[in-house]
Every structure is written in structure tokens, then in C-alpha cells.
Image (cartoon, rainbow, N blue to C red; front, side, top):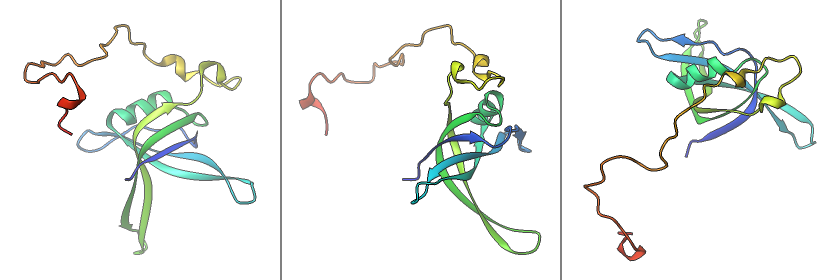
Length: 146
């Protein structure tokens, strides 16, 4: 299984870009702290890429220095550099991004980007509203096919 979850701080403002076919994307780096064997804190800088709605979400609500949690998968890609050498890049392809700071947890003087989150005014049902006429209702565990 290829699944990665990271929590850290953005090393720069994410910038929204668009491919020639009109697909949104953003590349950014997350500084993630870890402890070494001698308990010294070290920081890894993890390159990330997000596509479509996730890219738009990140560029709209996150800024340099802000804590972010991302969930996605590790991807490698190879290319030939201008000097002719072959290089391999590893990056996290972000599927989901999450806020890690509360509105009250902001650093003094830092802008409060969380307040810009759109509020959903209508409640959503906790169940599917799809037509279930093609399904047979299962009432007991003995009726399950597994």
C-alpha cells in the first residue's frame, strides 16, 4: 500500500498553475520535524504536488509558515537534466489537505486564513438518497453473503 500522511509547515506560499489542457496544479514543500537517535530535532523538506480541486483549495487557504496536514501517495519520476545526467525526483501526490491550527491558535500578527473558509448552510443527509429499488434489504447477519 502506498499511503503517506504528513504534518508540517509550508516553506513558501503555494502558487496555482494550470496545464495546457486547463488542469489546476500546485507544487509546494512541507517542512516536517523528526527526532534522530540522539533525540535532536531534524527537519525534512518534502516536495508535494496537488491537482485540480485540491490544488485550488491549498492555494486559496494556506500560506507560508502555516501548519498543514496532507494525505496522499509517494511518486517517483525520472528525467534527464540539461547537463545530460539522469535524475529521479520523489514527491507526495496530495489527495487531501487539512488545517492543523485553530482560529485561536494563530501566531500574533499572522493573518487568519481559516476565517475565509466558506460555511455550508444546508445540512446534508447522513445516508444516500439514491434510488434503492434495485437492492434487497438485509436484516440479519445470516443473510450476508460473506
